[in-house]
Image (cartoon, rainbow, N blue to C red; front, top):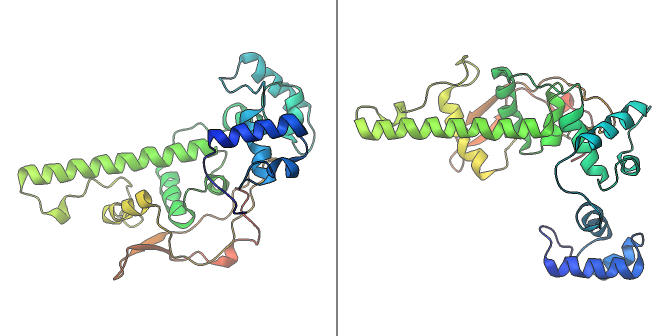
Length: 263
């Protein structure tokens, strides 16, 4: 049978619940046989993260946060987040991990984003797309949520400025279309020109694949502190007959160790 992907339907959830009631929440291969198109892993994740009775999905309480801090402080070595569910009933291992790394971890960098960080973020997106768990390695103590939110908020800023500049150009009819670009957001014109940033916007919106040298993603460990590898160097946007695409000018595959992305 063909493997399904994407959003679960109500009928599938009902079949999964019935299978778990009959077989218990352990025999996932047998359970998957009762949910056409879904794998044992998909069924396991759907049950433990969404459908499991008693699972809490609302805001975290002060008591839960304190229990999590105490649990982390007692741990030595690798974190096994599933073990923390015994200390914090109703929360899944995934919820606990994300609460720690995105909210409670005292090493989280909450400082204002610099223009250098934003510039790097756009360069990395051009190369890797929205794989936030891979991008997080390049930013010291920034969380996945912080990186994702910063990307989209900055993109909206560019889009708004662009729209305003175009509207102003149409209203005054004194500014040529090619001169209607918004004010340069990054200060160094040699690093990021306004024209290049605007040319990049449709690539982000449409999430097109980019032509770049083939390389494996750096491994992201959820078990300890993030490491910041060698920064990606400047990206250059070029024109072609078929499509505007982004290529990396200096980054080579040898800059990245072999391994699989952990997303």
